[in-house]
Image 1: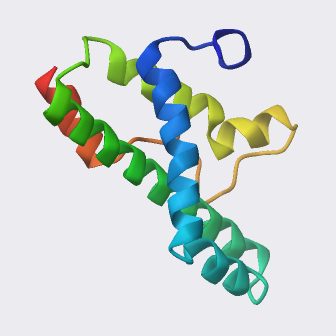
Image 2 (image 1 turned 90 degrees about the vertical axis):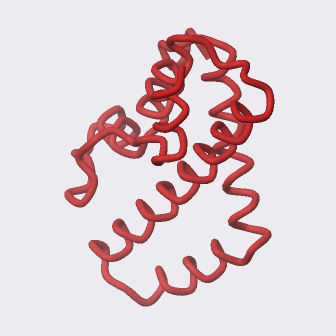
Length: 125
C-alpha cells in the first residue's frame, strides 16, 4: 500500500479494507442494485453525482467502523486518522480520474473524506 498509494500505517490499511467491506454492505442491502438501475436512466452528470454519493456513503460506513473500533478498543494513535484520510484521498474518485488523465467530476473536486463519525475519533486522539 505504501508503494502504490504513497501512504502507510496499519489503520490506513484497515480503512481501505473497511471501505471495501462498506461496498459489500451496500451490495447486500440492495443499495448498489438500486443505484445501478437509476444510473441506467440518467444523464452523465446525474450518474457522476450518484456514484459520488455511493462512495461517500461507503466512506461514512468506514468512518462509523473507525468510531466504533476506537470506542471499543481505543487503539488509535496520533496520526492514524490523518494516514487513513490520505489513503482515502489516494483511492478517491478525483485522484483516480486525474491519474487517468481526466479532470475530476465537477460535482466532486475535493478529496474524499471520512464522515463525521471518524472526525469525532480524531478529536479524541
